[in-house]
Image (cartoon, rainbow, N blue to C red; front, side, top):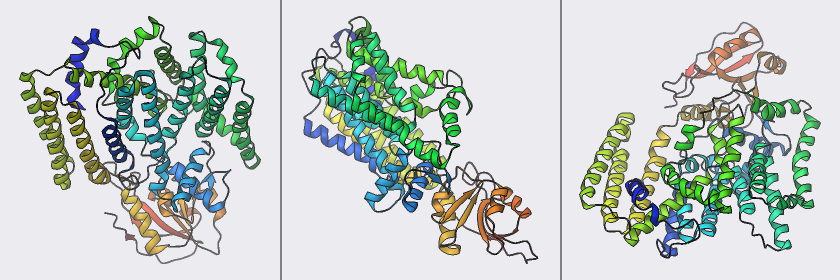
Length: 580
């Protein structure tokens, strides 16, 4: 993709007047024949979404909040009241737990692969949706480009490979907005009925995914668009009896069932919704999202920025309804995010598909410009650009070898591949071999994906020591005994230990569970475990030393101990578990 950045700059300067009006003219020449394009996109999608999906790293702290409740639902048969290590987990709606549990049932086991599969499939559908959206508005060439841009954006790769709800929610929100934005004025009543029923289904799923955040990111842009575009009559579309009934059921049925078992759930939900917006869970300044707006759409950020001017002119000067919808979409959602005191980068996912549509138009125009001869790289620049690629490859190799000296071989492969592919890309671009340029870029993506997911990400996994420690405990010491995880509410250890496992968050709670006629096995940080000496005799069984440079465990040595009633007991030796 770096091959196309200098042409982008040249295109911005010299070819602005030659660009076609937004989705009024569709470039007559395709980038390539559709079978080749479909095959290339399938290869990219397979690499980005599914290569080593379950093994490129261990589950993260946010992923276990989806996986452990799903596991406990499957074990207990209670799919209404989620728990995490035996304690209520009511801060989020249950959709993500149901998706993970359903995937595990279909796959035959609950594993990192089955847990991440719903997100990967949602990502695949999102890429297809963006390609379809761009094709309907701007033509087939932009449609193919949009699918490629979506699959290779940083934010997409980050979140489509996680066992979290964010990319699934992004799919729900974007699909609902597409249903509204693409509705023709002359649509029949029957088709309109099914369109708005689908809209309400997605609205309900968005609520079950992340409470008010999901529906607000749909309703705010749609309502504002109807007002600004003088389509107030379309507000009647909201009066859909079946859809409204379905949404009302999503709003009240699950909360009522939970409140029967946990009356204090109201306070938890208030804090997660209103409290989060008011800053009770932390706050950030107004500029928090700026670096993420630039970084998350990479490497296509500047391609999207290149389309801003013509999109703005079409929206507000030419009264183009499609472009106006994109701007209202952005402003409405961004205003909601800015008003909320609590901010996180993944909240931006709702509006990042806009960048996909904008970047795809620039990419398609540049490729067609080269094929038609409107754009060309000067011969005098080809050599320096190739040398620059070689220099960047050498710099990358040196950085990787310094960081991971044991991975010199994969680092060399990665640096050589990127340098050769990008260098040859300049030569091919000079001869206007657009299809070949795309081919070498796809090749570089494949090799980079294999090397990064196969070697560098596993090697950089900061949690793998804890996983090995937990697996050795189960295989060598406590294969079937219940283990208590003490004061570690966000640690993947709860997942890695497997069942039976439960959490306790205070000494008093553990004391009430401790029966004097039976020992308890407890795992926690050493400075926490020392507090247990007041309620029982503590006998260390295994230790995982504190990690360095962010390698877990980071808060001290991790100890497995046995608690017995207070009495004089000879100390048992401590065995250090080698997790390296």
